[in-house]
Length: 210
Ligand code: B16
Ligand code: MG
Image 1: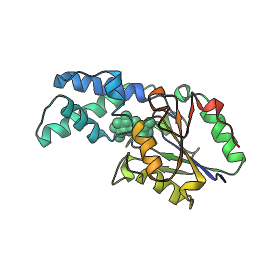
Image 2 (image 1 turned 90 degrees about the horizontal axis):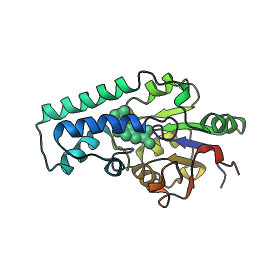
Image 3 (image 1 turned 45 degrees about the vertical axis):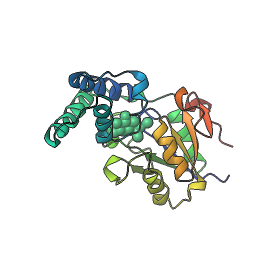
């Protein structure tokens, strides 16, 4: 395959922020009286903020009014914002910086494909906002993961065909999105999705440019 672009998911691939999302959703679930654990959290990885709350409500067999729904979304984001106050370059996951540097030397596009509406803020905090040629995030999407829109938009911005890109993902919804879009996808750092992707890496440190 003639690879011309690398598309990286953000939370869980570039930065170690999945723990922050987990802690914030756990607090919301507990407020709602819904059991929340790491296994259930796998369903929320890569999924939009509102879809995540829908899944928690469904688990608890609950419905709430629209205004309450919006309040919980805002509350979750305020917990999350508080938890990432101290985020810095120390939170960049292993192998990320060297992979980007190598890709640039080889003339490959580096693209972010994230469901998060906070993607630019996170990248700024860790000093990687200028490291990517294109950023597609939750603010740009009509259909979030597992729909392929996020990755198709990223490839399109670089004028690339999906077959010319590799997607790196840590979530089942992201792997599904990449596959639906016709991308090769490498799962990173999450054993739960090892068998869903085309390949698996414990960290980006072991990524080999062919
Ligand atoms: P926000 P990714 C996703 O980011 C996270 O995996 C997921 O846990 C989160 O709910 C979603 O972004 C929305 O994030 O509330 O910040 O808009 O993994 O696609 O980079
Ligand atoms: Mg992710």
